[in-house]
Length: 129
Image (tube, rainbow, N blue to C red; front, top):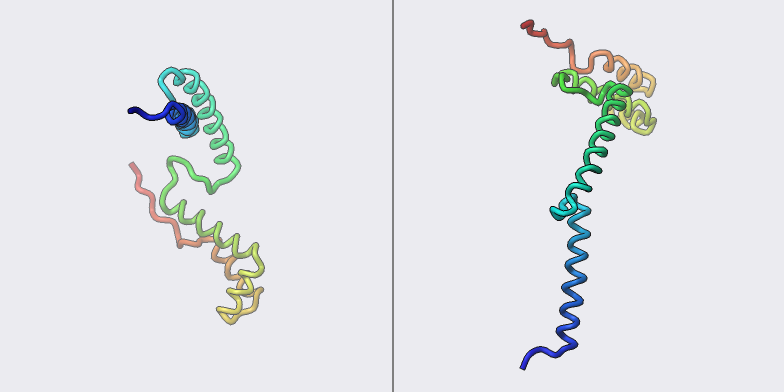
């Protein structure tokens, strides 16, 4: 004796729902069926172009975003300057450092501004090719 017709209908309904739900989840993860790939690929190329244009705009606008020729030293300098600027911009952090160093807030602000000139020391010698 096989399963009841209602059980078979429920299993078929579940499998149909599971198939479409799985298909929707995979499409969200950019893994689609082969038949839908050409339409999806056109959208990806446009998205990729748009992302590249946005990235170029950010690189032109903000120095700290880096580029292909950014050295470790330049990256570290940008990171240190961003951190120092953040500490200077948040007066609570500045007050915390002042208490920890037993200095006035003005002295701590001055010291941090001085550190921003060369936060990682003098730049290394460049090798000429």
